[in-house]
Image (cartoon, rainbow, N blue to C red; front, side, top):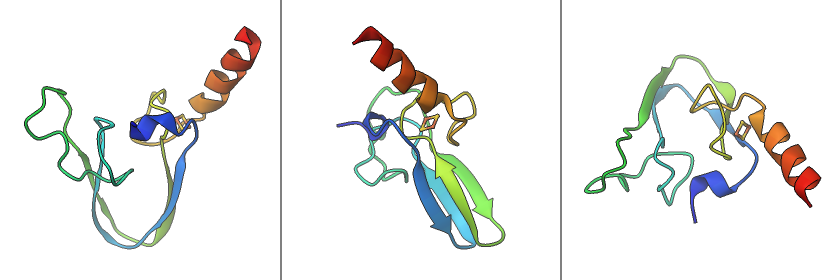
Length: 86
Ligand code: FES
């Protein structure tokens, strides 16, 4: 199972400090990188950000966002398209 099978965002309250968000979709600890990309030819590396103040973030769980690793609402269009196809 990929972290992008979620079809909606991971909504997380982050405390200050470095964060390593998974960009390959293989992590068993989504949305964080756990090194699952090591030894695989994913061409992806974790997205590293230093959170300065506590904040809530929405990390993409569908893999369709144009602003990865953050959710841009594209999951809504994806779900709507799936319903239309049914
Ligand atoms: S969860 Fe992917 S765009 Fe929202």
